Length: 325
Length: 161
Image 1 (spheres, rainbow over the protein chains, first blue to last red):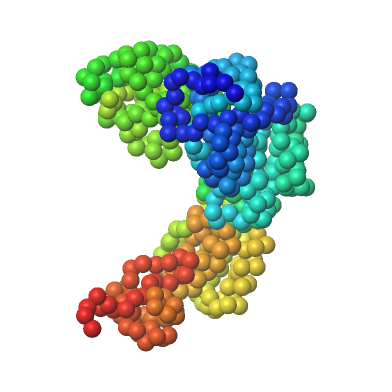
Image 2 (image 1 turned 180 degrees about the horizontal axis):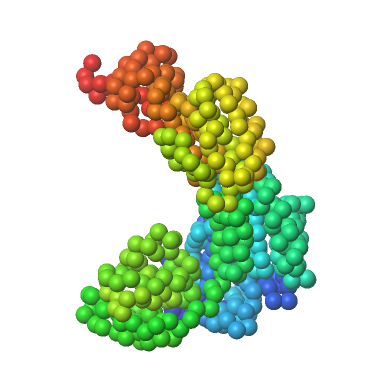
């Protein structure tokens, strides 16, 4: 263990968090590793709600990863990380972690919690989307609640398959092609007992397709829960102007440059993390004008109120926006 | 849960996609008869009141159903609220249930002191004697969907005895 593994600067997203030691790195598949963290003194870690995630600082950046445990009185936190070749480099740095390294992590955050009134769970995962879903599966097994899991992955590239089967047995259906997945999903969506809640995690387009199909089969939105880990590519957008009310500054945001980047270039320190409209860190208060909401964080109602925007991806429908900044 | 005072046309409370409707009426001749299920399967249950037998029949009908159905309850507030409590217990979400109340009839008051349920025609804000502990209960504006009853508590409790 070397102290040089520590970053001198603590990322704001992991401030007031924990400093943990990597205790295990296990390869799940060719491109996925599981990383386990524990308190260096062996102290118990804060419990968390199933489906929670952890923000891990790696290098100067910080990324959110789903915790795969059930969250009950944990002595360690485990995450699984998919190596993304064309990403911002966070996953590559994570894959270089080794036992003994010290990292700063946030406390667990919950954004995909199980409904307390659920009597049954229909879990749907694609690829690395298995991670929060595995957390739910573990909690279901611990609490004796029945759950079905549909897991879509490429042949031989499914992480955590053995664990999922140990937890849920024959209620796990693996699919490796579109046709068998569509057939399984349609069958499951029409045969779930009343009181079932659906939890889906995977690429945005995959989740949208699953949620649309559920709605077509009469599932109200109260039963539908999703967690995004990848945002769709966004277009460059139209240029617009922002008026920073408190600073008395006007800035032009050109097409292809985000509002967040523009503010950073002007010397404004805006808290941010994912820069993809998912995490909700870079929220700004809008005083005047209509934002063009392109994030996955705000609810439809919050978007309609037009008082808050995520400056990493959202732009403006009006020529000028006035911000409380 | 939406509350409609009169039966409404075409698919009350059923946004697109629902796969069937369970229509339950309590002692109200044919209130759900014109409830249009939009060509989807429709299952009718008719009861005289929300008693343990009828609620148990409703419970087993719901437990045989799958996600995708909607429930329409028609009758007096006492009956449909008791049935709505069973529906919630079976896992139905509020947006899957439509209440069509005839706005007449009794209400149930739940005694905060002895937990006895007293039926009354008295309006909210007035007083009723608890059938369990004989306390004069003020009928509060607070309605419990789980208990299907209004809260009743000792009237004038804050005054010195």
